[in-house]
Image (cartoon, rainbow, N blue to C red; front, side):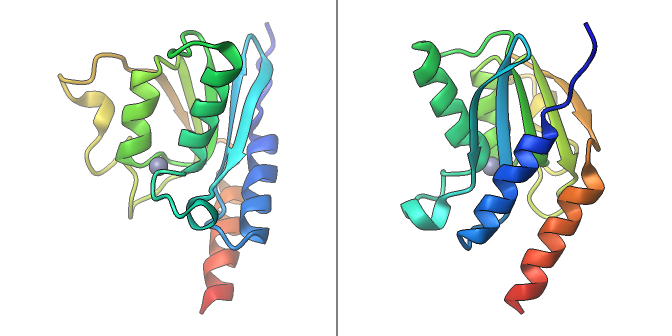
Length: 148
Ligand SMILES: [Zn+2]
């Protein structure tokens, strides 16, 4: 099967988040190559610090499938997941994680707590980083530059 990235849709979700005044991060979950959920950050809109793009996408995908796990599913996200989202990705049994920009400030996958390396982490997805990283970084830079 030819690999098809869904990061472009995640970037579209990130741009929509920026337009809502949210930190521009977007996520997409696919099953057998088909999109089953997509979301952008909504922490401000929902007054919910857990409403990260990945959390919302995981909740929507689980609701769509009517199950608590996303075994075999792939998650695309424009920014390296934070520790909370990395733990949720593990709990959801997501098979593959694709992320764009690295997050030295709040990332929990390749830096900081490196959640998937803990012995207490019972499921570790395959991780692919750097996909469309330049576009995702530019989006974040523009967003925070406009805030100053
Ligand atoms: Zn997060």
